Image 1 (cartoon, rainbow, N blue to C red):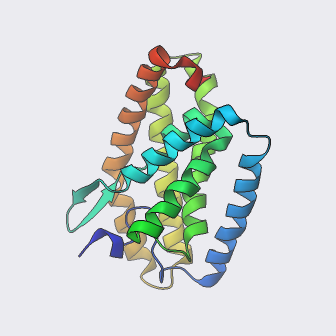
Image 2: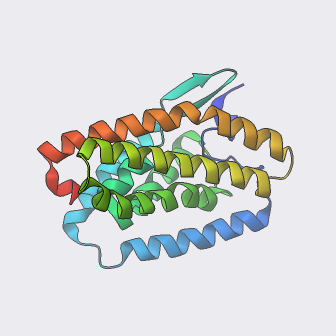
Image 3: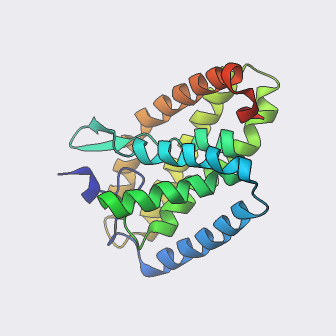
Length: 205
């Protein structure tokens, strides 16, 4: 059993969702990309590229968990740094993963985009007010935990309500499989924010 054939790594593959959900996902994708591109400046593009590369690479490092595997998400880090531009990094990363490694699928691409992008944008909105009250590490830790948790819950919900069959089984295993990822994501985003606060404070606003 290999990871690309499973929906457990947040990237839902072709054949799992009903068509109405896939169409709805593409509607969210179009609106999200249009909003993210609005008045984007040239100085923001390199930052988007860096996070898109990080999202792409993170999907190649699978973490064994029983008979299946999961991988890091990094959408929390993308949200903290890029804020409302985070969906641009997400769609580039997802497109490359689907095009080069068949990780995910073209049908559910919009749904995968929504599952990763919505929590990322929320992280971007929540980090700065939180970081004013706590340290960059604690702020990043909390945002990383929250973003990963919301992403996993959205993913499990999509599998439960939008999948063609085996709703409870697939959604439940996906939720349990990603619990370690939530913890790792929180710690990773926390350390990244602590480093950026010293080396690239402008990246954190």
